[in-house]
Every structure is written in C-alpha cells, then in structure tokens.
Length: 413
Ligand code: SF4
Image (cartoon, rainbow, N blue to C red; front, side, top):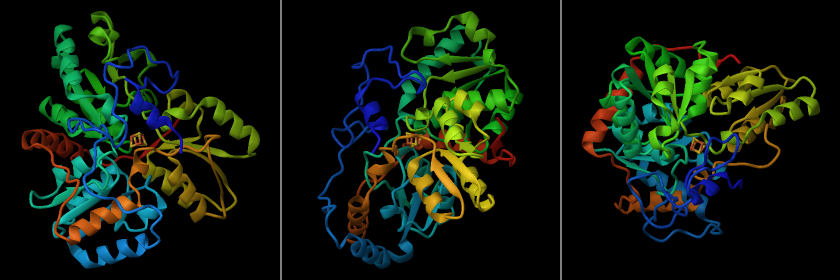
C-alpha cells in the first residue's frame, strides 16, 4: 500500500501535492496515527472499541454473509468505489460519495446504514437520513486527509480575514463534498453550497450569480480546474489561502483582486499523479488515452485527454470500444476492478507505483464482520452522528446543491 495518507497522518499539513514541500511546523497540528488515540472533532484516527476478528480467520466471508442475512432489510450496506474487493462484495450499492449519500436517504426502512467509505461520507449519510436511522462507519480511523485539511476554526478565522479585507459580503463559500459536516455547516450558514466533482461547474456558476467571489474548500485542485477549464477564468484570478499562515499568506490587495480563493488542501492520492507520468505512459502505450480525476493537479489535468468524476471515469470505460487503451489517474482499487471488468480494453494505472487510499483501505473484512455481528447482537458500534445545529446548516448547503440543475459531468482539458 502506498504510504501517502499515512504520511499525512504523521505531518502537520501535506501541502498541495505538487511540490511536496511543507512550510510549517510538523507539530502544530500533527495528526494521530491511524487507529490510535482519539480526536472525534476531526477526521483524525480514533480507536474502535471491541475485539476484531483475526484477518487470517478463513470463516470471515461466511460470517459476514450470515450476519448480513440475519439482519435482512434492517441493514443497508454502502460501498464506495475505492473500497477493497473483500468489502465491496457485501455492498448493496456502490458509488461515489454523493450517490451513496442519496442512496442511503432512499432507504428509510433500513435501521442501520453501514457506510464502507470514509468519515465525511458517513456524516453526510447521517444528515440526509431519518433521525431514527443509525449510520455506522466500520472503522472510525477511516478519515480523509483532504477533509482534515480544513477545520472549522480555521475556516471561521479565514472568514474574519475576508471580512477585514471588506470582501466577505461578496464572497460565496462552496465546499467540496469531501469536507467535514462542520465545514458544510459553515457553508450553509454563509449562503453557500456543497458541490461534487460531477457538478462543480454548475455550483461555481450558481455561486458567481450570488456574489463576486468564491471561497472554495478544501480541494484547491478541483476549484482551480473547474474555474479555469470550465468557467474560463484565468489562473491569475485564483489565489491560494494557506490556513497555516497569518491572513492565509495573502495581502488584502491579493484577496480583493481574486475571483477564486482556493483553500490550500488536496487529495494525497490524486496529488501523486504528475505530468511526467502522463508523458511516460504516452511513450510506453501507443494510442493511449489518459483519463484522470479533477482532484489531480492543474498540470496533470491539462495534459490529460479526459477529466471527470469517479462515476464519469466508470461510464467512459464502459462506453469505450474494445481494443482501446487507457491510462487512468484515480484510486487503484477502482482502476484494478475496471481492468478486470473490461479485459477487451487495455487499462493501466497512471502511477508507476502501487497506491491505494490508505484511509479507504482501513475498512476491511474484520471490521465489517465485527460491525455486522455486533448489530445482530443488538449492539451498535462506531456510530456516526452529526450535532443537530451543524446538521441543519449542512443540510441547507446540501439542499442547495440538490437544487442545482444537472450538468454534463466531464471537464474538457
Ligand atoms: S482518495 Fe483522497 S479525497 Fe478520497 S478519501 Fe482518500 S484522501 Fe480523501
């Protein structure tokens, strides 16, 4: 397994994924080792109570099957596309974060929603489901390093900086789905919307109808790629707000001149892809088409043939003609499954080394079995609940997103 997320868990802040440099103290907000200690106010690793079955237990698949059958319609298992094979086989539905949250909301008869994904996804499911439904994350250490790069106190401080620069009134916050409930709550409270990688263009167009500037959280790359490639803004219209520097590292003049204020966050997995890898695969595989996720850097997206969300990547490969060649820049579990499902097409991983999302991979068969067997006994473990006030504001931001009209999901480089 690639150590990119584990690296983040040990460092103060993983910068932008492009240069790998950290310009702040590694102790100021060092993350906990995954699965150890407790910091429930963030996406950081936390202990899970109870005994885990051994990973070597050969009866795990049968145990998971039996527990799921015993629970019947009372349990609904959601599996994100980046989950392991051993887990995804038990999912009732698979999808990206937004689709799964909607799927969860569409199952009001289920008592338990078991979310095989990461923490912010389970939070969104809790916000969108009925109060009596219980949402469970099989391993509480399955956070998201990107979501953890924007904490609510930092964002409130940033809003103060914008207020002092005299631009808060004309700035609309837009947060990526990959953010904590607290950040979605901030966004809803301040007139903004949530977006996904599928509808970021529409969300930004809506936001620019409401105000003159956008504060985009927490993924600078999705914000920049969408603003420049889809809205036609210039790179110079974008500034990067570094929450670890006084005033975000920006002058008032820079803030006033900017149209897009990008939070300095990134995905540790997609940030690993480089333009050199695109060049190398083109030299290695004649006629290859490069298909990447918009969480990749602007340089990589600019070199790619096609860019789009996880669901878009899946649809593109499904529709591709037999014999076509693809290099895909997204999480490896998904790329590997696409290659297995389409043996008539040449599908390669854009990275030269193996790289999974470390926190997505925290959810394994032992955690799933422990979760399901606990539910059979009537014990709810690892429940995710969002504080009601935060949930109400976050729901406002999610509802604004749901009201956005559908868009073509691809980004043309
Ligand atoms: S792939 Fe990136 S954005 Fe998705 S959960 Fe992992 S670290 Fe977070």
